[in-house]
Length: 269
Image (cartoon, rainbow, N blue to C red; front, side, top):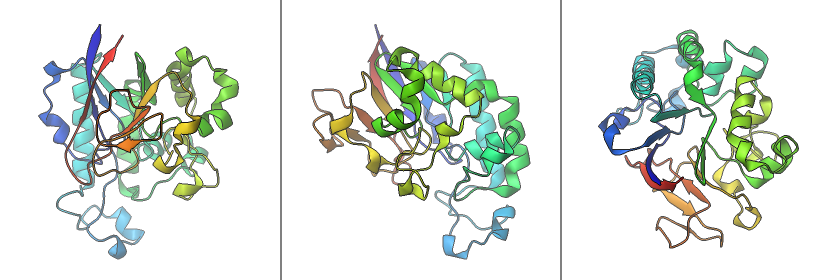
């Protein structure tokens, strides 16, 4: 049996997802990063501007606090309307708002650029009241979705001792750790300004992926690392926007800085 899926990349307040016809898909998977959004001119933005919802923002990609919050509420309503069809994953830009009311010490360790301090209380409340609607990883057939992906380096460093290569339980175990506010889910790599070599599943950078070390029995669909077009990494190291005969090991979907495009694929179950 084949299920038709569509993946919605990092929105950052944008609402183009509303153009999707939900009746066409068996699963509609939001890859996370609903929050935060670019300002018009980052060189003109100071810390105090982050507290001011009236600051000018980019008319094409930027969003006000009110627009971001309204879009998030609409996405939650969409999930409520299609509870089994719509999957809501979280990204690194969502995590600080989630942790704001759940774990203040961890919250201070995972802050993102562009964080909106002025919307913390209301965003934290929205996530708190709807926490059960969100996951950090989702698996279907031979495909696993998460915001930034699980690299082999991150798996060996942070999760192998917990999973012991029993990959059938991987999404469930990751979602349990999400409920427990586990730090290992949110480790920032050196490539993104952190201290660790490998980024975890909300922070892994595209430059961390090495096809030679990829031995997972599943392929992954991720966002987080911006690409000009949907990009596939294959086991032989090929990186291309084209679809080859074999299945890719990783598909990168975060294209919204360049174009509006969603990733569709059929999954055998």
